[in-house]
Figure (cartoon, rainbow, N blue to C red):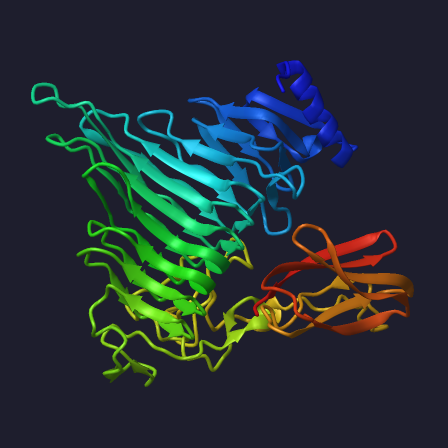
Length: 497
């Protein structure tokens, strides 16, 4: 079918209108300036571009809704900075289609630092594409992008794709080696149900006159959950000249096909203070690279190590906690997650104070208390394993019922996080009602299809708990919704079968 552009755009607008009757801003072509909450949602009906030298600022609470296969290209700078209570949402117009990507590519020899903080990327082919392209003769073009406290969910291919692409225009007389370096800093993010988590491809160029591509990426304090592919995948690109010294520190990997896969001998990665739990292969390296894996916890994985020396995994010593470990201070015990608090470690977890004692991460922002550093562990520094270590003031992390201090009556409707979460058969859902109301509590899958109605009745004010039995549900992410009059609240739960 051959549609004129104007007719195509009209059809897209009609599709958006069926979903957003109050749609406020339609965007296409070149974009810059500020997208604020007053213009939200911003409906991307055709590919948009932030041109070189321009900046797009996206404010907290803004929602960006893409038509099928549409993208936002950033050759200049993007500052998408939400906050803990008002995330910025990038998503497809509905669950039956996917948008293509948010593509950040350096558009100058000294590209600015783009930022994504407290953002959510849902239902994309590739959520975020970070692309360093060689532009400077005989020097590196370095692209750094900060990605903090973001959620990546249900990307078909990969949640974050990082590419360093060198270009070789050299001859023996006129060397023009255009090198590329991609240095993203990815901290405090959650990856749920994507094809892969983070994929990094370094593409060198040239034969006699090499143009290098490399990375010094920092991937730290992230949680990778329920990924059918690889959580962190280091890929060699075309061309002979590529290398990398990325750091994978204090991450948590649960129910992934692979945790970390380093697929080339020229990568020298540091895998430190992580937790690998219920993976098919926890970490794998290919070739003769000297990538290290120290101070990690491995539990209930089909395979812990592939391509590492045979000394990895052999219990030969004890660590500072007195726990059995291998020569790399890796332990092989149940990390003891507090599932009601998203993988925070219980006080008696063997992962507390079992990380590298020379690494102190108190400068890392606490994802649950923006603007504040992570608190120390049970010792004087935070050297725990995993994304969310011990020593947290757990009572401040729990969502407590808001009550009138004199009457002890709830003063709001509140839906709490289920516990345990993830779970495999039974979990408990908690909620409070500040007045008597007719309520419904319903379970949905990620496509919005109703799975089960747990409650549909009139209830008095008070606090309630409801047990939900999975009843042969497959592994994955599900939603539960509390509807009380005009009030509704939705939260996610993770089923692990």
